[in-house]
Structure formats: structure tokens, C-alpha cells
Image (tube, rainbow, N blue to C red; front, side, top):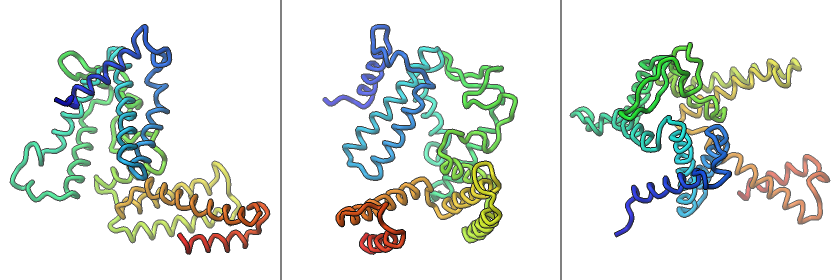
Length: 296
């Protein structure tokens, strides 16, 4: 009989414990929750890359690496007496059941629920849960479950003196474009949104005019008015992306890949003629770029 997923997961947890044991791996023993941050981010993007361009085998491998980082973080936390990987699994099970009443506590009206209604309910429930949490509490797992630990700083790193708000749960560590998308989505979930995508286009045109004005006045560079207006423009573009049902990070990654392919083709074309890009004029590069675009 093949091993169950649970048995294989238990094996991963035991391997992690062996790596962190006194006679385990020195590198693994030295890691902290903070030191693992770049690895978690790296694995996240490798999973995304596997989803977009990899094979099933590649995705399988990257998901394994991603799961390993979760087990690693939980093992360090368990050693500190905070929580175990079992507690984290229990927490997400409770959350999924709580936030899917149309599945686990289905009523007659839920039989025809749409995806948009599910998303609206999800955001409403998240907002209600954020509002109900005590500002000075953090989560600490006790033998009997999860309990508040008054007086300690909250787990998300916020100032414990500040109340939770609609946007306080959006991580500052997200890539800025993705964070803008998430911020606008949460604001929209409580009704603060444009009526239709065309209204966002009007806002983008307004922001472009303001950027144009600052550029014309010479106010460019970091911490300038142009930077402020450029930020407003990018935020408005993220809003338009959300309004159109487009995830902006994915759209920008595809645009980056497309530009890279075409630029590499332009460079290769000049190289086959024995020339470098530095030797070509801007018009020659533009002509070659247009040729490559027609072929791609």
C-alpha cells in the first residue's frame, strides 16, 4: 500500500527535526525565522515561475521546496515554544471551514452562489475578523489551542497601540505592485471603489497629466514631486488591473519576458552582422525592433 500524504508529511517533519538537532546540520541549526525570509521569498517566486512556464515535474519539485520552508519556520517556532506545524495546519483548517459557510454550513440560498459573491463574503469576513481582534493581543498556541497573550506585540509586527484597520493586514514586505493591488482590493471590499473601469482610466489620464507637468517643471529624481505623481500613476494602474480582473504582477512579468525576448532578438540580429548594439544608431535599433515585433 502506498504511503499516505500524511505519512510522507510526517517524514518531512522528522527530517527537519533531525537537521535542527544538536548533532544535525550546522547551517540549519543557525537559521532563524528572520534569516529564512529571503529563502521563503525565493521559493515563492520559483513556484510562480514553475506555474507559468515549468513542467508538472518542475512544479512538483518547487512545491516541495516551498513546503519545506513552511516546515522549517514551524520547527524553529516550536523550539521557541510558540507553535508547531500541527498548530499551523489546525489553524488553516479552522479558517477554511469558517470562511466557507456556503460549503461546510450550506443553506438553500448558497446553492446558486457565484464566484463574485464568494469573494465578497470572504473579504467581508476577513474585515470583520480583523475588527474583532484586540489590538494588544498576539496569538500564542497553548496545549488546549490558541489563546490571546495580552500585552505582547502582535504577530504581524504592527505597533500594538494602533487599532487594526481594513488595510493593516496587508504585508509591507509584498512587492509594491502586488501590495497596491491588495490594498485597492481591500478598500473596494468595503465599498471604496470606482464605479466602472472607465473611471479608473480617467484617473490614470489625470495622473499622467500631473507627471507630465512635474517633468516639464524639471522636478525629477528621488523624493521629488515627480516621484509622488509617478507613485500615484502606478497605484492607479494597479487599480485598473484589479478592475479588469488582471493580476498586475503576472501581467508585468509577462511584459518583462516579452521585452526580454524581443530585445535579445534585436541584439542577436546585430551580432550576426558583426555589430554590437553600442555601434548601432537609435533609428537602426528601432527599425530592427519593429521587424522583431512583426515576427513575434
